[in-house]
Image (cartoon, rainbow, N blue to C red):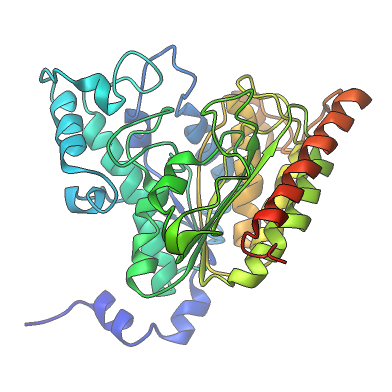
Length: 394
């Protein structure tokens, strides 16, 4: 029996010279991400990822070798089965093939947020596989960071789809790390919505610390993610939620990170980080009511990257397509350790209508809304201290 060159490198621990010459970050991309198409009228349009890919290419990061642009491989049914039930998997397969599934709505697939469509099985395998590829590349040392912009589908549960999400690639991507005996921190701090599916899948698992900042469930889907949700059994204290009032700004997010995420990460000391990077907490997103600017959003990402842990970044929400392309370009540059000019290349700006990476405007927030957001945040942090979650225990 013979083994290939790639396997030899892996078992040798990867030659240090080769590692040094590899791009620090990988970007997982395929035009087939467009196949995850819920409908022409659906808020989630994967054209945003094409805009991102073309913007990165316009900046020359692939050509210069600063970022490794990698074609993803689809996940297998066994990979999906790490987090999802057999009956749910069979329902997705049947719906994908156009077969009648009498109880399809029981699996969260229907005419609502997550409609079934022909080819949903294959399309879902691709984005889940891309997240697994990210994890494997980082675990092997091939890259220090890796980014799958089609991932971040954090609302999917074990036996049902929800909130535009069929399979929970965030949770699936944790398993290469967990199977290697490593601890994982899952940070979901810039998506407007609570990472409920990931929380549920690891609610009793102390190997995974989940931290979610999100608009309060009192005003936004999925209606969960309150401070009292701290995990159960051996996982008690390892689920941390910071709900935010509408119109929460950069300053509110910075306080939440400093008071909650930073001490929790310091105490937990993860081996790897999974970073969900939704863009819908930005002030001009049409589906939420938060007020992050591009500067505040990127600052949070850079705080996590600066921890120096190997990490994978997975897409998420974001329904202003130009905002998504801008923010995720800034993120990929930060993951790769490169600086980009704020003004986008002229040819790209002419074709896609994005002239700058950072915001040219800013949200208008009343003092009353700012104060209400501070009161809500302060009360939530105090509740977490009382409950004794990781990093905030007395």
